[in-house]
Length: 274
Image 1 (spheres, helix red, strand yellow):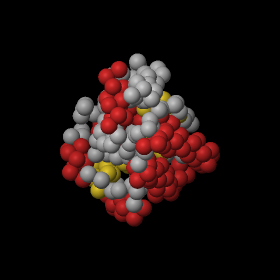
Image 2 (cartoon, one colour; image 1 turned 90 degrees about the vertical axis):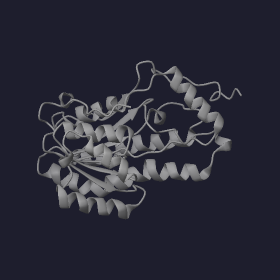
Image 3 (spheres, helix red, strand yellow; image 1 turned 180 degrees about the vertical axis):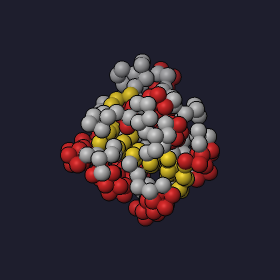
């Protein structure tokens, strides 16, 4: 998995310099890549996630660790996010760019699904985005009112827009994330805040590493053999590009897929053949 920051050229030259960003899920994968890329582009970045040691390593690997702040935060806990907001304001001031990227993935044939795993996905992937967006909404609105760029990125998934056998609940949650972005865009766009949803396809992250159903885990591994996953940096580029556009332009919804993943390629397990 790449640890080098995405070149700042993926945003308009200087467009992100001096901005204050918050990234959730920053301990690994897309969140970590996005944090590194934003620092490389000139942002001050607050890294939020549950694994402080891993986020510290990410921060130290950035182009300028002095422009980072690590705050151990569980996005399923509103009090944790309130503490993170206070820490942000004490160090850097209000946020003008928020990337809500924390997420988990579990899967199984629906009849074998574990409700406790469903609840965790709902609470982290949707509830975490809701809490994150609400916690930093006033910062973004105040920034936009001052006439400066203000961006909220929700990191969703391709599964929210296609049929994904074996992952019914995950897919439903990601569809809700996409609809949340559309609704917030209607509410906040007129107030100057750009709301984006980025829906990646198969990406080389920790997502899926804890699938408890053996058959679904095998199917996930087979899927990764058929399609070469994207590097998380590939997804980070889209955040830089969207945030670097002129304030009058909103990159509203973006599917980011491996070239060979033009459609979902089901495995034999996912099709119900055992």
